Image (cartoon, rainbow, N blue to C red; front, side, top):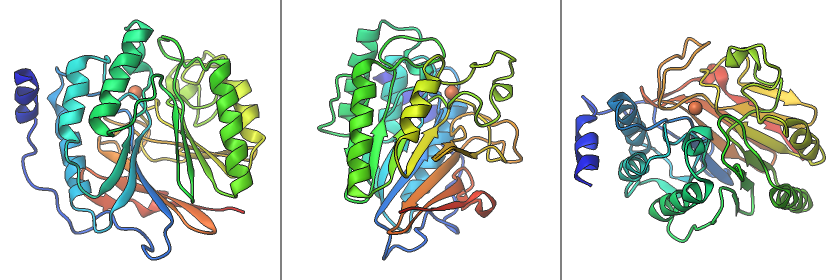
Length: 310
Ligand SMILES: [Fe+2]
């Protein structure tokens, strides 16, 4: 633990973040559900800059003018799935104010070098630290409110860059999306990797290999499943691209949103610094995604998008 204290102290922000343009809901009176997304933090015991960026992003939450229901993630919380990295994240988010629930999600970097049983055990320990009572015993689980369904997906086996979803997970996803359809509420499906040929893939992965940078071999099956349901938002990370023309993409009826990196430098954008986040607001008749530069404590209205739903 002493090591964690040292890493944390070495990454202290140099000054307090301004609260001039704080996290504030567009309409707190009518907002039915809100979530802040962080993605691809890649916390590491060798790169203190990432920890510093997240400590500033924490200040952004501390400065919030409105409480937020959920802090959720696009995966790659850690660089290598190490215990030190998980404990550092738990320290950064310890006693976080202004957020009701913290819902962890893993990406390929969190799982790629480990036995799968060790990955799941570590994920459960992280869940217990961040969200008391949450103990999925796998990398996927759901979180339901009256206004929204959050379906956090995760690989069912060790993979290097892609995800592998089991039959059990596909069945569960179909069932939960049907339930959200019946309840008339939007679903937010979170998985680290985007669908194939979305968000400028495979170019955004800097390779000509067709399914590189995506879910992988199961991309088509997942796309078809998502398209069978109404008001589905597929929220991913993985690409480390800043806010740009490819952030939002429609794939048939599915609204795809690719989160930028919160811990690393982002490419393809004039918003290239770390600390990029997104705020989701759900209203009775629409869903709003709001781009935010949490490193400087301000919204980026140019990349805000509103979706009507029914
Ligand atoms: Fe990543």
